Length: 184
Image (tube, rainbow, N blue to C red):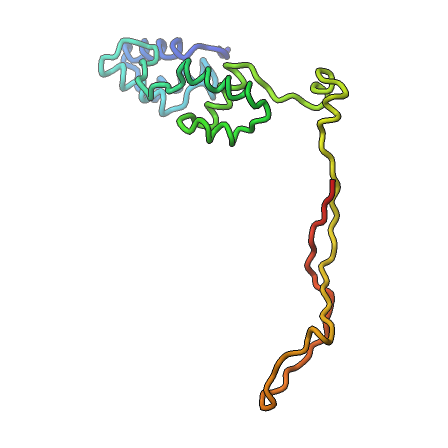
């Protein structure tokens, strides 16, 4: 029988107990794997916890981490909220430029999770604004056009001196270039 959903501190307590019974890290790893399953704690982690407990550690819980202090203050959250409310069509790139001290992921998390904003889809906007929303949509169309500028005989004439060598004239063909034509 294996225990599937065990807390980390529970497994560490078992490791601490087995270290106190003077079991080897290899034996402890096999015991943990047998009781808690293959993927619960890897060999390296078991060996590290064995070393910690042999060195006198008593606590089976994670240590508090100092880490980098959060730069997300209530003032910044309020400024982000005001920016989104002022111009609801801002994209994350524009907001990121406005708040360079925040990473893109933290900014996105602040907007979606902390402030509860989300992008509205067209149907949601139509429900809210009705036909006024449809009138605000700008539509257009585009097409690809082959780019061809034939050269006339007159255009191909050049000023040359009588002693200048003659130039070869090549047959003109339609260019492979395309240009985009769009209209609203």
